[in-house]
Image 1 (cartoon, rainbow, N blue to C red):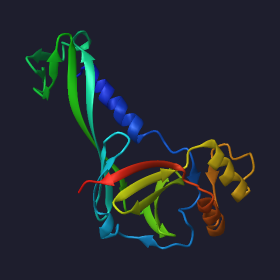
Image 2 (image 1 turned 90 degrees about the horizontal axis):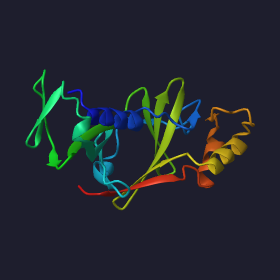
Image 3 (image 1 turned 180 degrees about the vertical axis):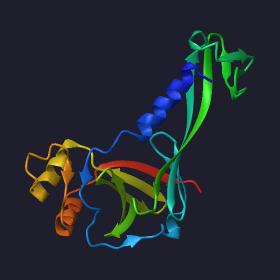
Length: 211
């Protein structure tokens, strides 16, 4: 179905999964900490985002995220050579695919469910625990994106490095100098610990357990 709203869906998927990290590390973090081969059972379950009501699911080896979205399209934007509208359903002309819509006047409201795998423990996705926190190391090209996972009393926080102040703090702690234009760092364990204590990974998204 080559219709305008599917372009919007593809764009959403691209922005959610292909944006690339702002800060990377030369090695998985923290250094000299053993990899974990599954998430502890106390983390298993479903958590709802306090930001956008998306739902994160954690199992033994996987973190996935589900979004329920409502896209809006004008009837005049439909590619009628590829699909046609009948009552509250769009039909593909070639593959007979069907999509339920809410049809009000000149506007279509399209419910859409997106499921995205965020992390799967493997040789490219390493899980480590340090100082009570879980660190998600994800291979990105030849460097590692690192996120911090916090859990306490049914609340989950997914934390990342994003603002200018903590990037400059990381630069100072690792003595990286101003030539690190690509924001790639290589802290030793002591430097990484110092960064944590100075409120590193300050960009936080909170989730509450729902199951």
